[in-house]
Image (cartoon, rainbow, N blue to C red; front, side, top):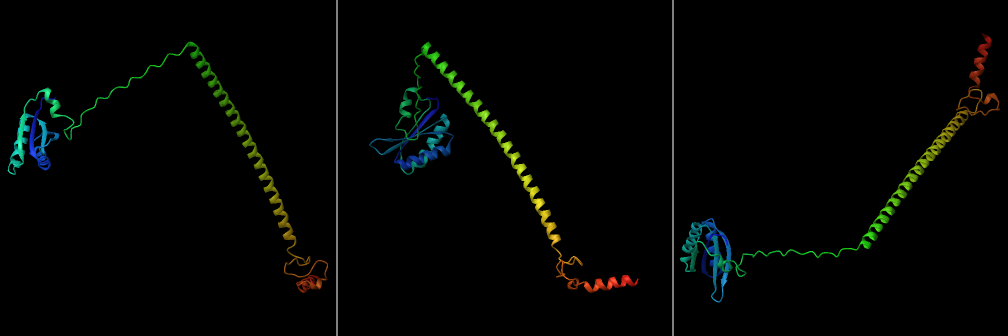
Length: 222
């Protein structure tokens, strides 16, 4: 137990005990240990600790406030309590105070040492496992390289095919344009797309026949 002073105030009922604890905490710089019920009498004992002067001031303030109502049965201040009464102040019956449970360290059971033969078997198993992992990594690496080469070949093939298709499309476009140009007119005299004359028909069917005839006549007069 620390050498702090202990203060106790015994009140009639729990409500008066809670009020006494509140007054003690507000009136002085003390710590609340907890409260304990007195068996069979309905009394509540509030326990505080702190410096001697602070504990005395807190108990006096609570006694003065609750004494007017007749709720205080007894009060006590122990300046330097003995270590032997620590079990009476801090126990399982004290509400608000939790006893520190000592953690019992867990003792690890020592494993039985392996024999030399077991060690050798374990080492050989580890080596074989490590070798298998290395072989698997190499196989995976070879597969990755083959996949990369195959992907590159596929890309080149697709590029060549697309180039050939584009060339064929351009040739077809040029051919279509030339055919459209050749089919834009049917008259080989005036070469006007609007002229209905077909090649091989009489010249009089050409819409520009008269104009061409007058031009030819003028050229002969000159």
